[in-house]
Length: 356
Image (cartoon, rainbow, N blue to C red; front, side, top):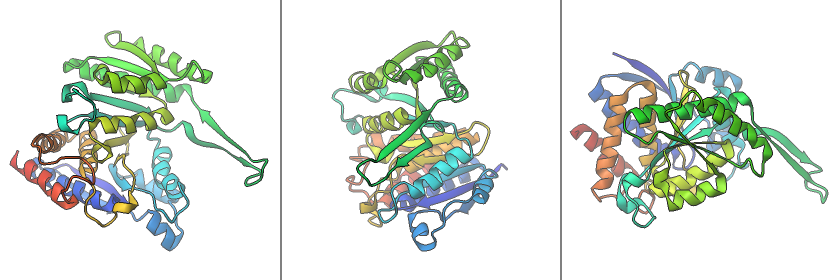
């Protein structure tokens, strides 16, 4: 019997609540599919920092490397300096474990969730490959003469050939696998190399990798045009490859196309090594403890984690349960306005998993 060691960081706000529902789904599919796992809880969060002033240490990052995967709820506390704990936990994982791919599926499960007129599930089904360790998030820069009239703030975006090439290759591999299963087989590079000339490295890396995949269609869009086309013709997209910053932005737009932030999942991935999975929503402090947050993004993140671990049948069970629930019409919206309690929605998913 296969066994896994999974780190769990519930985090702040609604994070622990939605993570609990993801763990319920995990327990259900593990029982059915016959694998086991051990959970290792980590306390790092805004609350924990306020109590202890402790952030993630190098020793903890070393420990994370020994796990099979990490499941994260959400990080962010209103009483802590913005970004302090997020950088410690999320960037600690991304940079410390070199999780160079941020994979964000954008899939509409049910017509009524989409805010676009006349768009169906078949029209919104693509994935964004966001480079995850470079760009504007590289933390190179700072302030000069801060809090004076002469203040200067500088941030450097870093793009390496290795970083661009491996992100593009991951995207082409996804498109190749998809094409074998009847998907379009198209990779769209999204950058801004007309205005930000160093983005030229992305274009060159993209075409360099594309030579190894002659069966895959090439496409390109500047980021502003991409946002327009995501609204006008989302059915065109299959696999998008893009920079760290642009990927962060356009996947929030994509989340709204599929029904809202409450349903959007992501994987922070280094193929073959420890990787981290999380819903893309924030900690939503105003909903803390109210049992109204939508847990579907966290549950979908657990599904992505299982797929990454090779438990494809278990991941499929979760996806099918979510799709069945959303198509039933019982869930009017995939957010805090659904009228369904967080734990009740988790129970609904588990019931469908067990009944599948």
